[in-house]
Amino acid sequence: MKQQYIFFVLLLASIYSNGKGSIDSLCQPESPPIPDNGKVWCNNSNNPNSVCIFACAPYYTLVGTNTSKCLETINGTSWTKANIECKPDHCEPEINSLPNGVVTCSHGSNVRSVCHYKCTTPGTSMFLGMKNTNRCLPSKKWDVKPPCCQAPCPSSAKMDAVIIMDSSGSVGEANWEIMFTFVQSLIRAFPISRKLTRFAMFRYHSWVDEVSATHLEDYDRLLDGLLYNMKKMVFQAGKTMTGMALRYAENKILRSTANRPDARDLVILLTDGNSSDNAENPAKIIRGMGRTIIVIAIVQRYGSLSMDRFYVLAGDPSNVFLIDGFRRLDAELLRNLINKICNDICINTEIIQ
Image (cartoon, rainbow, N blue to C red; front, side, top):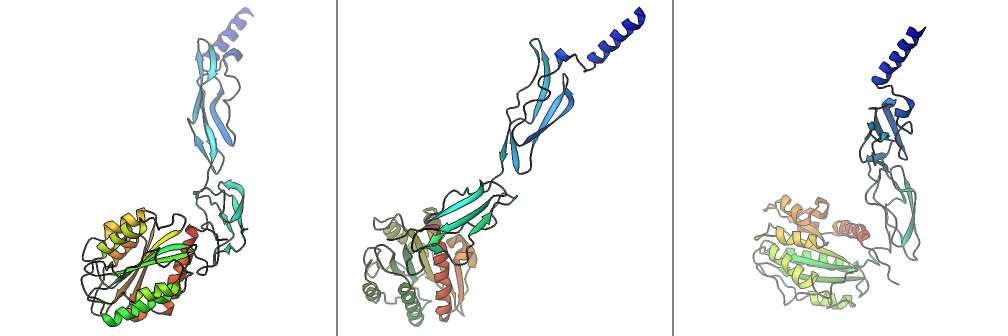
């Protein structure tokens, strides 16, 4: 009997020595602390040397060390600190407000959240074609862009726009008149006002014609005055110094004190040729200032254009209108251009009371 007891004690000692320790040697609690929305798996329960691995529930990301170990020390047995957290996956940009409206989201900007939008400022509505809901997908992207609440456009558009007209030799006087008429129609479509839309414009060839140039503050109330001043912009042939023209727009107009910080800035370039100088750098500077560049590239029968260069100038292919000849400066292009401008105005919308 005594021999059997000794054998049992030796057997228990052997078991404990193989990782099955006594109750006093087990880690407490039975598993390391589990973060909210997390799980843990241990390869040997809470016995010494057991390693536990953490994971997060779907649509959550683990932050911190993903393992904890049951260690024996002279002070006892305990779990190593993991310092982990399961953070919810979310979409960028985070949505918490809607200018001129309200937004309510089921789970903020987290994955699977559904956001509902409503315009509340009098005189505003959801821009045409935009949805009043969007969802944060498991890919951590919104299914559609957030909408915007804006006043009717173009009738209430607020922007400071610069129109740059190519007067180089390849244009010719007859085509200049077509371009001139098109620009007049564009201006008439928008409300000329100190509080709404203001236009600056100039022509260029080998140099910028500063004599006939119109700045933002010159005719900020009178459409007729602006149209009358345009008559000074007569055709004169020269090279296509587009880079020089863009630098003039930047330094003399966009950086002037007349440029309103709360209005969207837009540069519209009409040209039928590749630039004779470096236009990419000044265009990059203008876009870096947060301004939008729209290029109307006119292809003539005897000419050719490098579209890649125009894409670089605009920074976005959707901001380039390629047309086949000056006769395409017509009502259809005008509608498409106005729709493009009004759509982009959602970037910066303010209601004028």
